[in-house]
Length: 209
Image (cartoon, rainbow, N blue to C red; front, side, top):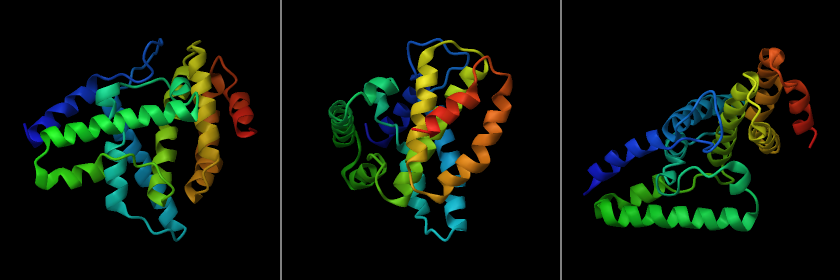
């Protein structure tokens, strides 16, 4: 027991595959996703800082690196299902938070429990750091879906995922979102020009919503 149990549990994140049940040319684990989210977030935060925004870097790294730890207990639930309704999303979040709390109470030494509660909490909120996490998380959905569409994956869920993530990103009011939409996304569309799918059209339709 103790923190050793937490360290050992991290291996489970390597075995949880995102977008389960669908054919994928590239499979991505939750741990790989979390690492990429940290990389996106630190660059997004740098862009925010260039526009005069103050960033709590400690908070940012804590919430981005641990934001999906709770999936050890409930797995990765498909995006369309997870967000089918606010009620369902709230219920799933309560289950996840409850299981994380139980894990902390049962395994983490008492003197470290407040730290783990802070680090493993749901980090998406209306703070700058929470919004950056939201953008970074959705950016990874965009990139994962884009890679599948680029290779001609006919699973419609990847078009849904790509559109959904873009809509979520564009509605977040941050300087880094404008940079993503104006500077990064056009390069992605250009790279996808040889895709069997009309990625430019799919993107324009999503951004028009």
